[in-house]
Structures are given as C-alpha cells and as structure tokens.
Length: 168
Image (cartoon, rainbow, N blue to C red; front, side):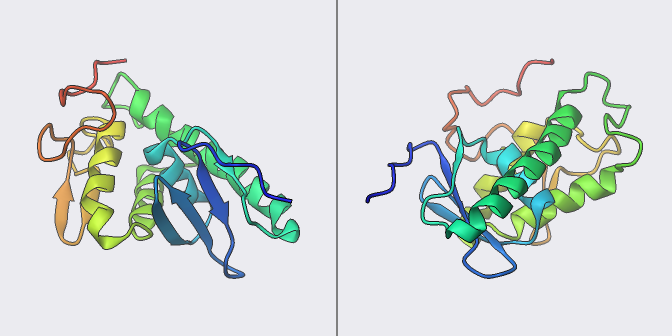
C-alpha cells in the first residue's frame, strides 16, 4: 500500500532518532529539532499548509501529532507577538517573556541547514515585523550577524513587493 501523496506546500514531520524531530518542507530538511517550541517557531516562519506524518512509524504518530498541536500553540504566541499594534507592549502572556520567545526562534535557526539560514532568518524577521522584542534588538542573531526586518537582499518568494507589511 502506497502512502497518500503529500501536497507540495505541506511539511513532513518525522522522528528519525528517539529524541529529535525532523521537518522537511519545500525540499529542505530541518533536522535535530529539540522540542515543540522550536518546532512552533519553524511552523510560524515556514507556514506550511499542513503537516503530514508520511513514513512515520505507527508508534510515533500519536506523539508527533501531540508535538504538532503543542507547536501550533507556540506558533500562535509568536503570531500574537508579530500582530500587535503597540510595539511598546510585549504582546505575550504574563508567564512568557520575550527572552523565551527569542530562544524558541534561535533553537529553530539552529536546525536550518547552514546555506539556508540567511533566508530563514529573513523570513522570520519579516514575519515578526519591526522591533519584535520591543527593545530595539534584532529579530534573529545568526552567526554573529544580526538580522532585523529589511527589504532587500533576497528574492521574495511570498508574493510581496519587498516592502514592509502593512500595520495590522
């Protein structure tokens, strides 16, 4: 029996090792995802249409589904942070500080193949918007390079003209 085909915009989640997750999206493998928060940051940044479990062992399916459900909650928190209109306010629940949200994103960046990290960081910065942490610090730090929202440098594959997104 052949597994059902995965739509091209879907991501495939697997657990090749007992402790780490692997996400494949648009032909890029994000390996060694340390937990649900980092997976949530990946889902927030990549925005796959769906997450499939193609090829996952039957015993891994339920834990993978739980990981995705939890990761979507982390992604929703990042979306709330990105969507806030008052950048002076944190936009996160009281029990979550900006340092924790930064750590989720940095853990996600660590899973990205080296040659794809600048594009991923740019996408994350674009999703988070200007001054995401409310303290003037960059959205993402990548190999001693700080990446904030910028308008040039990468071809835009998301149908935008390169300008900053309109305020929410």
